[in-house]
Amino acid sequence: MEKSSGEDAYNIELTDGNLLGEGSYGQVFKIKRKIDGLMCAAKLLKIPLDLMNKNEQLGYKRESKILKQADHPFIV
Image 1 (tube, helix red, strand yellow):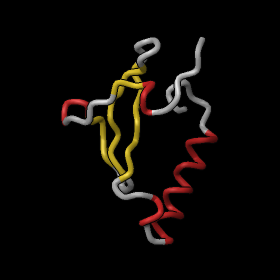
Image 2 (tube, helix red, strand yellow):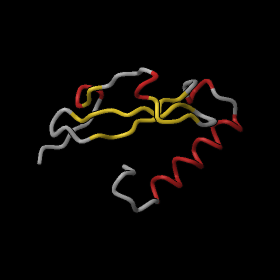
Image 3 (cartoon, rainbow, N blue to C red):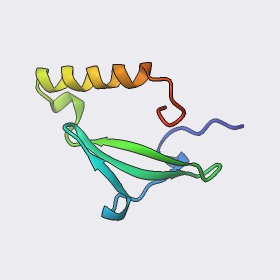
C-alpha cells in the first residue's frame, strides 16, 4: 500500500462535529485518510512548539515520547 503523509494525504475538517477531545496542549479531531478512507485522529497544538515556554515544551515532548512508545494500531 502506498504511504500517505502530509496534510494533502488527509481530508481535514476542523469543525465542532469532528472534535473528539481537548487536552492541555491541543485539540484532537477526526480526520479521514484520502488513499483508503481510514478514519484517524489528529492532534493540533494550541500554540506552536517554538512559542511554548520551557515547561510546556517539556510536557509536550514527554507526551510525544509516551505515544511513540505505545503499541496500538490507533496510535501512529
